[in-house]
Image 1: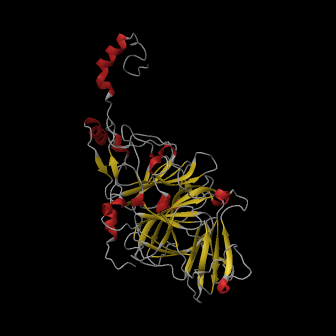
Image 2: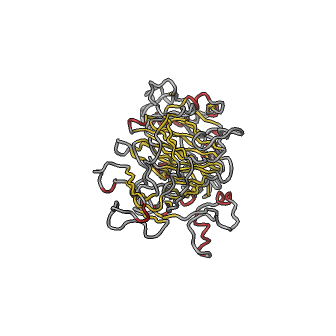
Image 3: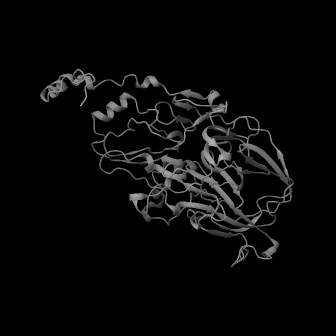
Amino acid sequence: MSSQKVNPEDYQKVFHWAETQQDGAVPSFALRKNDPYKYQAGFGNHFESEAIPGTIPQGQNSPRCVRFGLYAEQMTASAFVAPRASNKRSWLYRVRPAVAHEGFTDLPDNPDMEANFLPMNPKVHISPTQLAWHPFDIPASGNFDFISGLKTVAGSGEPTLREGIATHVYTANTNMSQKAFVNSDGEFLIVPQQGALDIQTEFGPLYVQPGEICVIQRGQRFRVELPDGPSRGYILEVWGSNFTLPELGPLGSNGLANSRDFLSPKAKYEVKKEPWEIVYKLAGKFFKSTQQHSPFDVVAWHGNYVPYKYDLTKFVNVGSISVDHIDPSIFCVLTAPSYTPGSPLADFLIFSPRWDVASHTYRPPYYHRNVASELMGLIYGSYGGRSDGFVPGSVSFECGNVPHGVAYEQFKMASANPPPEMRISEGAIAFMFESNRMFSVSEYAWTSEKRHEHEVSMWDNLVDNFSGHAEEIKGILEGVGRLGFGDGVEGGSA
């Protein structure tokens, strides 16, 4: 790790990563100063990495003999005949192939997790009520690692259908010791909220702090350690799809999350002859295999199917520079397409520090009913767009077409006086897991003592301002001969 003293929370005060560059007064740097690892930059690139130079065979992938007696192993994530642009695979050159294990055995179900969100499952719940959860507690006793501390909140679909999503929180208080995890169902988008994660993958290590995210793709083995102690965060899991960058459309070539800011690991191997447990999640069930050597023995690799991370302070916000709000799709970091063109299976959006400058415009979130299901969380700071108390680690949920918006006091304040040009969400990052699918809520979240409902009485004083203009409206209608339509002001139609 860097010898430079850095308080990780200092990065929570950054308005944008550009501030760390000090207008060119210091040499440019791409990583937080307390990140101990080196990475390769780019999204969806074909990378290659060697812990020992000269290991990767050139001109072919699987030679008769790999240097140093290594084994060649391919990991694929798409059909062999998938178009080149969407064909995903990597070649790994390792001490022992993944097949060197001692067989599979069942593990007990995690009672706090759910994978089947179809309505016929009696363990999931449908509700139009706006729900929320106070932060889920990190266990103070017992040993709960990243895997055993997983808890499902809501989701849609079912993993064997290869079309669906699940949202989870993790609450961990101990490292994964001689244990690795494989999600055979889908991709994990991991959002730390408290405490950094030191993630060992087959491709090399990733260090992910609050304010950063990472994606571990389907079938990739990884282990999580907790360098800062107990940790909590959020996970968006997608089944049957891969996260990709949203299209930029009229924005052109740059903006939102830029490809060059995504980072993938460099090869780092270990050769340890000791018992290891590999935990597999398949159709929401858990299994394990055992082996007498470390699964992280990859000396070199190349390919385009690799884990990656991203620093959310590098997100390039765009928005209105004249009037009105642009749709929240402008806050999309990553998207996972569904089978329906133009209708995402899942979007990951953030609400981070930015300028709010639109003139003649109602600035708070407008009253709206979205077709999408929305599940929000707060990484750090405070966020004013929720209808009640919302602190870091909380969860807030609205299913599709349920109306929401701010209280009357905020409406009146924003309507009465034009707000100044200002910076908003300073020192804060909130996020949203959004989907075109209807969510159902897990039994764990539904029965949790942390669950509460949004206080609907906050909208009781949304007064009828319209009726206060009765005489003015009556005069207008009389002037155009339409006063009889709908009995004047009350229920009048144009």
